[in-house]
Amino acid sequence: MDTSVVKVVMLTGDHPTQAALAWKIHRAIGVAGIVVAANVPRRLPGRSARRIVNAIGARTVGRPLTDAWRAVSRRYHRSVEGFPRVDQEHVANVNDTATLSALDRWDAELVLVSGTTIVGDRVLRRAARAEGALNLHTGISPYIKGGPNCTNWCLARRNYHLIGNTVMWIDPGVDSGNLVATERTALDGSESLVDLHWKVMEHAHDLYGRAAEAIVAGHNVPNVPQSAVGEGPTFRNADWSPGQMARAVRSFRRHYRTAFTSGRVEREAASITLIALGSAP
Image (cartoon, rainbow, N blue to C red):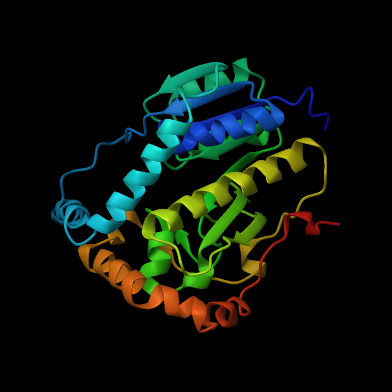
């Protein structure tokens, strides 16, 4: 495809991290429009006991993780002034009818998704009329999927070799689409929690940008079913309990650095398959 005429549309959450990503994508390949979703659930969840307990955990045993993410968010907030000044549609939920109208209005040819709630069938069907919908996932699929933040899940499970990012096509499942690229984030074990999350997000933005550039330039990119690579758990937000938060904090403080210096991370990394962006025939 000719990058000068491809209509790229972004569907993003309303967060400084996504604003920074939108600027990078726009500077690289141009964006025709951005749908900014407030991520209001279409059906408001009840205040279940588990949800309340998890919220308390994020402010107590999980506080180091919460504080690290807030520090990263502040850093992105200082680095950008809102979203790029292109056509925008602000919606409560990415699956609102206004999203479909915007995709038609901007004649979307490639849809880039980041930081929204799960994209529903109606939006996916519209994206399928063009190149499709591309998603950015923090964590290396298929080995670790879901949410709320797979970097922290990697810490809780001591799967430091799975800290990285995935670009995949979106299908109706949760982080289950065909893989375009998977890469580990370059880490050496010396990172603070803030440094760790910052490096992961900067790497995520870079990988997503390279994948999008390759697609709009008409290059062949991988399109690999996850079942052909391996398997792994898919986590739900509700699974992120105070116990898991405590494990992640303890894992980082006691084991993270030595896992790198001992060579354990590289040994375990040898057991996974990564999909290189330039590996398609």
